[in-house]
Length: 225
Image (cartoon, rainbow, N blue to C red; front, side):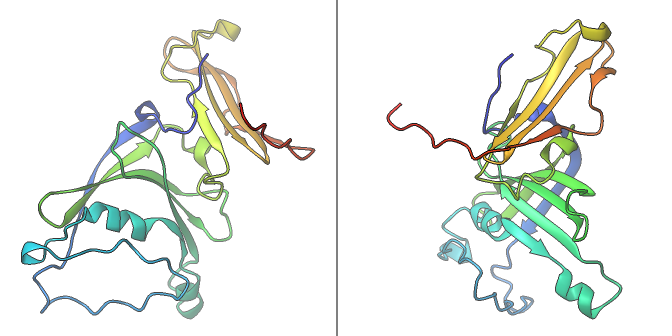
């Protein structure tokens, strides 16, 4: 059984029939809205230098990704208008070479139930050169429960797992097993399951991974190895 830490495999995704095109308002100043004032704490996006006919000279997909990355919520809107709920929206960059170089994991949940997201997706952002249109290829997750809260732990955990049916198992009538594991300073999340020939689960937790919390502080990583 082998684990590949740090990357998201395409085998864990299910393609959704959804393609989103984001067009920049270059050359349409008469229809463009004035930019909203950014919060003082917001990080500055990558600089975009105007080239021929207003076409950006840097990949606009990188600009869109930078603007999307981070944690957002609609609390202020919900406080002033009861037609809207307080929703948390998180985007964090993930490694998925099969999908491209600019990939985001997206998680959306009620602000009072962050551990129960109602929407989880993966976005692969691609610019349409030489224009200023950014396409977002949207993917659904086959096992969304395994990634709940991963954006909040981004940079502090390694996630990996088996791929496909390559790990054989005969336990309780199974033909193969799958395993997803997340290792962080706080503990380990592990989801081991067995499936029969038809793909029906025959052992292992069904709701989500086991969460093992660390009882003592981890040792400092050894240097020079």
